Length: 221
View 1 (cartoon, rainbow, N blue to C red):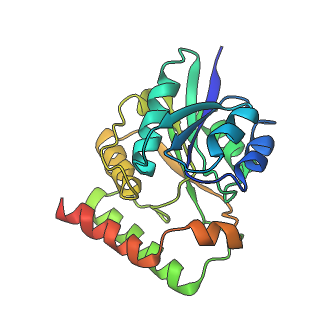
View 2: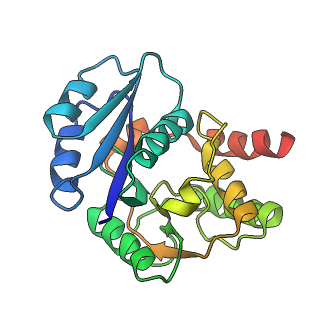
């Protein structure tokens, strides 16, 4: 027996998370939502949608929420793969499914989503420049030739996941995951995914300046 767990950090996403989970759980019934100190009804909505809910009493950041979700999923002896999936509607279930299939086929142990392997994702010129710059510096520091080093849609097999330990609680965790994968050297591939930007997701997203700050923080460390 084997099963996939979706790990979904949630912070004040009551407006959309129920709809996201309704679609997601038709394909992936096992979802752990880590409610990261939300002040709205996110936790209740996630539970009513059928997800397992683990709560942080205060907001610790997305990196901490992912680590909590990883630890929960690893408690299931039948888990063979974890997918990190955003709660704001930006990720597509079909992309997650295709990424899991690439792991289960034996092709890879880690599959990393990339919005730059095809033209489906509409990215502004400035954001594209910042993300491409982030990928370039990630390659310099890790040797991993990624086209999109800060994509939150990822699939990892159990063996790799068990060796990941996130210490960057907030958005710098994205670079930290890449750094740890470079040290672990699993078999990895990138997979073309579409990121669906809506007015809602844009209002929740990090600024471009924060993306630059992430890189600066990691290089200083």
